[in-house]
Image (tube, rainbow, N blue to C red; front, side, top):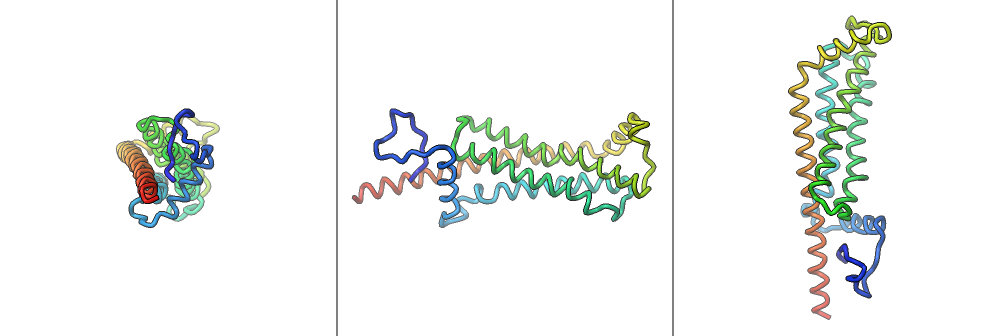
Length: 215
């Protein structure tokens, strides 16, 4: 059964009516059981791909601050969990929860709007979020383990801000490149998801028409 949007006056008498949640569950079950996984790879792999690009961006940003503050192995795991692992999990979760339903159900009736929203979410979690958390954790561990002379954030907040700007300055161009890459990758993959949803519905419609002709 193809998933179609119809006005109330256009709904056939024998049609199965589903609310948004039921329609989403139904369609994702179709995806899970699709015989040729390569045909529907955008719906299957996009969240994971976006999570992976977030991991790469976050690792680059976190490693920069750790290197500048000469942390070595101090607090490596403790800094990677909030600055790398958490953004990747959030990227995957938000794409599945807020982008995929719009793609499948076409609730916004605006492909560009959905792609832009996906791109902004990806840019935020892959670069903006690590740019906030990575220096915070690096400053904390540098102060704790005395690897770098840092001003007190309570007594000299302006000096801390100057230090942040100094350490971040060499990172600006790479971060802009990572931001653009992540945003474009998310928009492109979201577009591929939309195409896949259309192809699945078209295939199901063709099957239904063929079955009706046989009957």
